[in-house]
Amino acid sequence: MKKYLLLFSVVILASCQDGNVVEEAVLIGTETNAAETLERNPNIKAKNIILFIGDGMGPNQVALARFAVGGANHRLSFENFPVTGIVLNHSAENLYTDSAAAATAWAAGVKTKNGYLSVDSDNKFLPTIPELLSTKGYLTGLVATSSITHATPAAFYAHIKSRSKHKQIAQMLVESDIAIALGGGSEFFKLPLSDQTIHLIENGQSLDQDKLTQHARVLGLFAEDGLDRRLAPPTQLHMTEKALDFLDAKTSNCSGFFLMSEGSQIDWAGHDNNVKYMLSEFTDFDDTVAAAIEFAKQDKETLILVTADHATGGLVLQKPRGSSVRAQWTTTSHDLSSINIYAYGPGAEKFSGVMDNTEIFDRMLEVLDYENLDSNNCVN
Image (cartoon, rainbow, N blue to C red; front, side, top):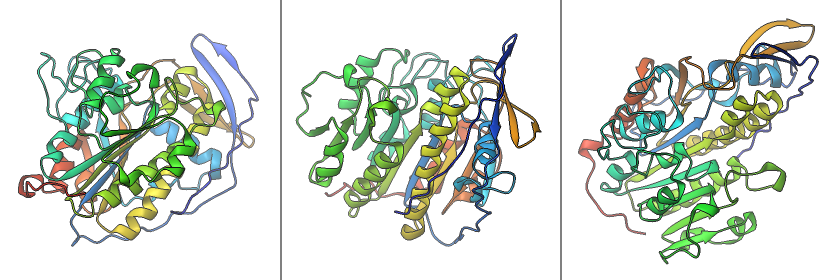
């Protein structure tokens, strides 16, 4: 897969606090990649879906990443997608959403309370898209730079009204049908695993050396909790490439695959009001999307979606001073802005316009023609 490296330079020219406002100056980059026209073929039906989540990635995070890499005329990998929509993301009882409620909307198509994972507001079980697709011969993979039991990945397999119960959530992953899950969170699992059908990987070297397709299920745990970049764990790009290779090989005799890959720490940088941290995480995220685009170009039957659960940090971009953009953080929490969705591949046209986040679930199933899929078994 072709890899793209995003380069940026952040200089803290000013860091001042005025109430809750923190301002940083970000140098405008010069590595401009102009807009690229991606091929569209309306006659092909989607077989696979790759859903990318930039946790905390609001429109201004996207804009700042673009400016920091290549300036006004630069395009990030997913900004070349032919279809863009706007997503409304409030939770069931609040204009404010957390990651659990937002991820439940994509995973199960229903609004729920903040903190709830794939149960409704009355704590009733909601079937998730991996669970529904598994009855149709699909395999599912999950990748996160947080713990794999964190809210976003957990919503695709866990059913619980508290996102903080990581040990219970970890056991739900072990008992699920998820074929490959890569991220952090080893402290939440009972190791060694009681389920001997799961192949456990605990370091990046094993991720490269093991022949993953020899195993029915793979669980990669590369940190006690979230991935600590200082310890050089596998990147989102590396984990996603391995998950894609695994799923593509294992579904040669299956209906297809569903892969969710999350850039979890874009959100953490927003909570920290740390531009340099945010842009570093964004680099890995955008490189990962670029690699998936190369896969989809070859495969022809893969829909790629890029979206977010919410924006974090109340990021405001002000008039430049010289060659620097003024980036202001106005909160250390999530904000209420709508977020975008970008779509490329068969069925992308269904993700245009303004939609509720629950509609992403419905439209993904519609793209795969879920109701008419054969209920066949996946032969590996």
